[in-house]
Image (cartoon, rainbow, N blue to C red; front, side):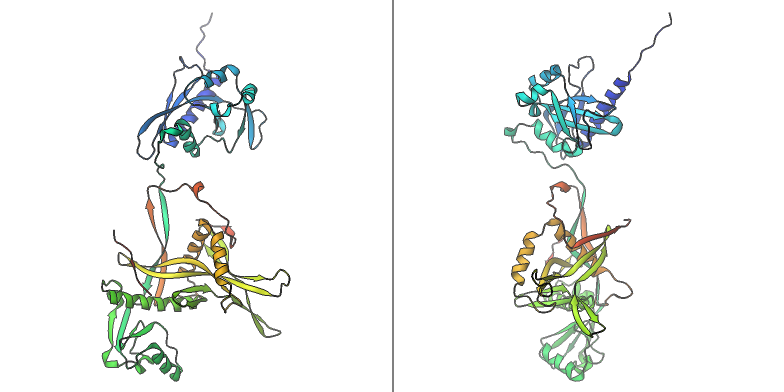
Length: 461
């Protein structure tokens, strides 16, 4: 008779494929996997030992794993669930031991694995008698995201054991928008005028509006404008004008020079904002608010004008539109405007390692007609802040950074101030995305997909 060779069945291949899949997932979790020997396997296919992913320390907390696999559809399978039946003998064996047991059902051909903690699932007589498991494909998915639940199952609640968060390299983006450029020169000259108002009155008589990036201090004018030019020559003693590199003030450790430079930056920001149709709202004893101005609709027939809502397009990973001015009307009478809500921000200049940034604090402003402050501004603002979540604030910062830094042929760069990108840095440990409490941003509409150690010195305005 011919000699017969040794054979390995298809079921054995499928079973080993399931073990390989489980081992890969366990290693992705940062834990260790030890398979049991086939000769001594009495219903347990392997052991998971919990390891601290951050430090590498093994904790001697273990779980036993029983693997089951298939190449076809599960019983009563739908897109979201399926049923798996276990043998009474196997179930009795899993329940009688002192270690937690995971039942992991796999379909290696689809790279799918689902799990339940046996002793927790079969904790009532009714469920045990049924010998049946109803798997939820989303909740019971055995993948890297199940690492924390697996670890908690292995560790007794009264042990007080803490596992460090697993390493998750992440790029953190701040609300600090880099100042890409400012005026190259700074001018100082003696003036006979004691206040800004006196200088402004001279310009008014001359019917000139030369710019606002200047101020009077102790009998001198400090300016990014060239004081030798007209009409500055009418308010400055020409023989006293000194020209400096603006960096001398920007990089100085002298507090007076720092304050003078920041004051000119703040004046530049007002002009910069106005060029982008952003209005400055000055508050008594509080920081000014920069808010988006509504669009003007002109009626050709009646030759009348009216403010309308304003929508801006911007691009990060995706091209989106954002409603930056929204009109709220009465439910009873749609012709009656209750108030305008404007996207807005507070801006503070700060220095970090001789680099200047604009600290962006997104907020909202409310007006009755697009100009006049609403009497309910504070109340509406407080209500809006209570509704906002992390994602909404983050999107607001990113949008503001894009809008302030973006320029085109119709919106040319301002020579006295320009912005780059938000300051970001990499960290070895991040926060899992599912741990953030995200909320929908009602002002954001996605249009289409496109390809994609010094201390801070905060200065007064």
